[in-house]
Image (cartoon, rainbow, N blue to C red; front, top):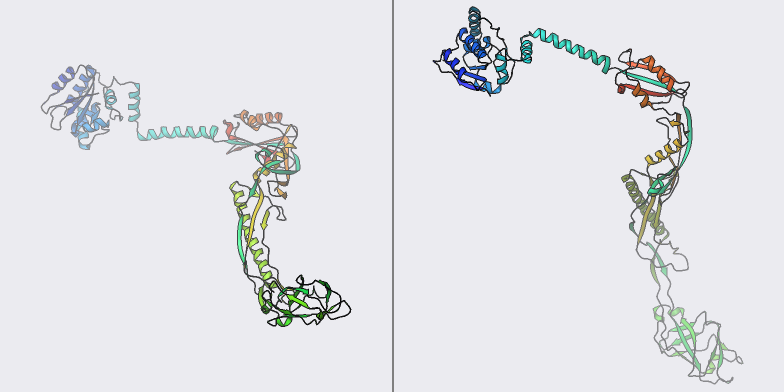
Length: 573
């Protein structure tokens, strides 16, 4: 690091020489000269200081704010700084700060005699660190690099521009000749057309993918969707009254003059039986015309009866153990033609007569109600099917797949559980319709399908096409793989696809090997070399850009090889 030596205002040149002599261990010295100092204001002081600097083998810089001293120091060849801050920054003065001071200093220097052995000082110094600047300022102590820098700094701006321009021209010329040029070599090789109809089978699971003509698929299953709808009856049907029914118990206490019990009693017509409240019952269709063996009381035999038309309805519902009478009309016994009423009949009803209802109306489902319910169910089925199908598509999209469906739309299996729908009733029919009330009906639906990857399907078609290429050939780039079509599909991951593919194959060629050997080769030599490597009937065409040269590009990366089918103009690079 340079040692700072502060000059006093009254110091003479001899004082500065003494300080140089005493600074035995310091080679780099910096004199800080005050603006009002008397020393170093003449060319003689500066030249003496330079002589002693060389004699003691020191490197000296001067720091001063005085323009006159700055001009003399620069003319003499000392590294000069306007301030200590500029010294620390390594920023020396590059020219005389004031024109007037510079002119005066130049005149003084020119008028003073040049001492023997002195070299003319440099007029401008490069921007260097203080130590480097000191080395440059001491003349003989500077090395060849410092002299080269000073020589360069002394050149005029025009000369510098000439040198820079020449260098740029040389660089551009080298780039144009060796770096920028490119070449395209077209290799015409006989190619052969190859057509194939591939059938691809899809199976759920990862194990089906690697096999030829097989791809992996995914069995999709939607969630179970449910939706309710209501069916409300709007029809009304009139119901006739219903007679009460029951059983009358018959027995006989004997008499009548014809034999003895049991008596054979046959009913015909509609005999009437009346209880104490004048409720009339008759034999039923089952008991009318039937023959009963009537025992001697208290043993009885039961005869089915029903309320007569005059008492049809709830009035026929009479209690048990009523008193009954029968005048025998409509009935007879098959013994001697005597009337049955002469045999002391006893009638009783230990059980009540029940089931009689009055005439009424009931709600039933009309044909229009049944049609409306069917339409509601169809709408619900459609909506739920749309939801389930949409979910299947969303599941397939997550795996970048599509749902397998044939052109007819089959492939999605919908499982639907529909409720039992009401049946429309003909209210004018004699048979009563079932009574109806508002029903809540539920539809349950889910869907399943198979999803496959179109990319995987095309890859399988490509693999199938490649399998048809002879062993000594290779499939050329960009074959037409067609569009795989779904032949059949179902739930569970099964699908059958077919696609018609067309490509071209040619004998195997390693274009990279050719490219690596063509660098800087002449076009004619490259053509001869390539024709020797290619199959018979091949052609080689070479084009260069931006202009033709006697050699191909130096870098093989700038040489582009393109293979062309001679028969079908099918290209690959």
